[in-house]
Image (spheres, rainbow, N blue to C red):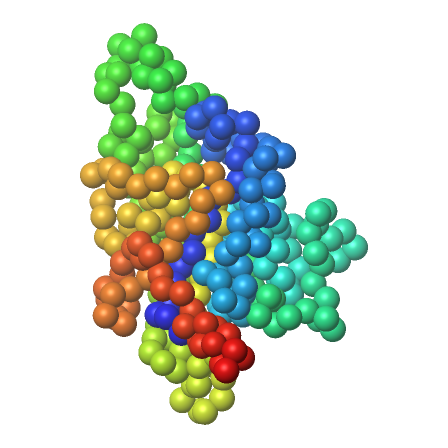
Length: 273
């Protein structure tokens, strides 16, 4: 298995994300197109031979916002744990309930799900619901500099880059201590062999949240100051991957591209012989 990874997934499209409006605490549903694309992402990227292997997920963090929670539902990871925002009598609409008697273990996960306030979107304060151009016009009209940059200046009545970095740094430290420390090497991962000769421990983490906060998370993952502008893009419904260099927890990195799962390809070749 690869070294531990963190998959960061931005929620699907909403009317405000489509129009470039800053959406922090406002609750908005996904658009029909947004839901369709998230389902397609789940089918394309989730599975034993795909980017996200449900069986290798150690933990799942999701924002308190409903649009992020709906996105997690639509990915159809086969979560054996009931979604914290649902009771047992009301399974999520348009998703496949987990059936332990018939589920493929490679298409299901025992990972616990945490609703994490630390990955709530930036508190945009007075800028909630506005586009960047509207914010700059408003500032100019009030005698403030129109040369506004959220990464440098933060939001009036909301959060500063330092505020966001502080809460994300706490989560990053938690992930490394709880889910990644000691889970490197050939014996790691759900198919690995632990020191006791038994199965290895899952070592991937999945986060479902929002555009600005996930770009901030990726920057802080590699120790980059938000004030420098991380120059990262994560589209609505997009998936990013973070990991480590040289099999070292002290060398966090952004994973630009991963290799195909060789084990699966070898099995296919063996069947042909």
